[in-house]
Length: 231
Image (cartoon, one colour):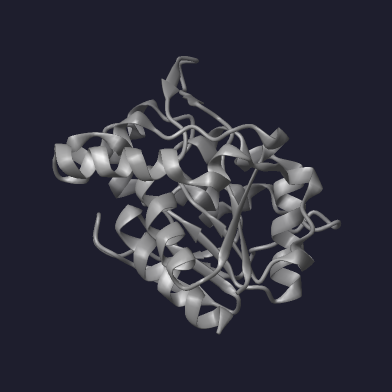
């Protein structure tokens, strides 16, 4: 059994371009699907957040519309309530990546608010990539990569091929016009080699020990790739 670290947003809102606060958090599917895959394989999951705050699920991600019906929504809500690691997160500042076999960043718009500018998360990401540990990042989770910078100011993921929530998907979701910035644009500006598949379809990219998924539907395939990497 290995320990896998989930680094999750502590934000419950995303500040839009007009200064208003859009309620959000992490996207339920992007936690639950990988969490189930890793624990079913016998691994232990530890959750870390900025300040060790309990993460908030985006209410939209637990809606019947997002999950294909009331029964699925109720089951997902119950699974989140029963997930012990969510109730007892550790603080990012207390994390030693050497204690873990892999690191995973779920998305949701929350990371756009906090992890995108969190220096502790940025240092962790750089350490994990440099150590060769499998690092999985999905949907809006790659916003955390914006804070990963080397001492000389070079973005840690410059030159990495990766994916994340696309501009097209943000427009289709209805928030692109209100967003202070778009994830795809920022990843390209870092010098990353960004790629995307069809909107909402599973799409993953692997470059060295960095495993990225484009959207919620990519969380399952991404988790399976990480499980293979852990061995």
